[in-house]
Image (tube, rainbow, N blue to C red; front, side):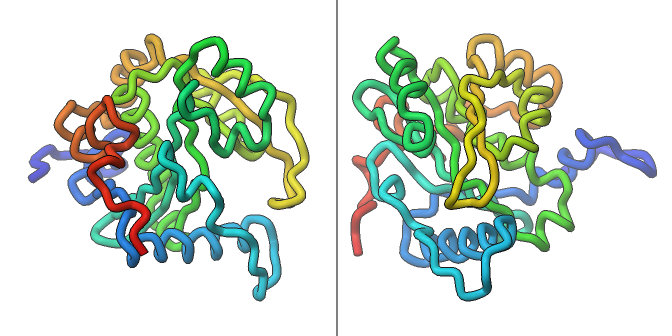
Length: 238
């Protein structure tokens, strides 16, 4: 139980500290969870891209079934607040959402021997986003933990151009590819990257709620020498 006391107008860090005991990070592996991911994606993409009510886009894609990717849900007070997919990109597993959009840039980094966490398909529930403005910070704890767990060199950021200032300010992310217009999403997207070396110490100091221990990461991602521990999961079960 959180026994700390806060003032009338708690800071961002204090508000997140209050919420964290009610937050659950979960691998979305069973049929019900996977359907919840697709439902939230459909509604989220339709909303942010101003797509019609009957839009039936390609919500699941090939990366949802690849062995170097996994979908995660972030629950607050038992309710699914947002979803995110994480992919580990390296020479053995070179494909992810970012390499689909910027293949030359990503492949050059892979051939240089870099290991990268590639977060994608980050979608929030509209009501949860309004109720919990701290949600982006709570959600981005996932790739921070994944970078540490899998000893990644970089964390990629495939985002709408309008969000670049947030990632530059919080994660010291730098642009590594010029923005391109996405016909799929109806807006410009760009690719940024954060260097993992030194990032954790920096974030731990500025945002202590992003700290994690090995046991939590092991339970969430599986063994560090297996890509999201997929050898232990019946991921491709019907």
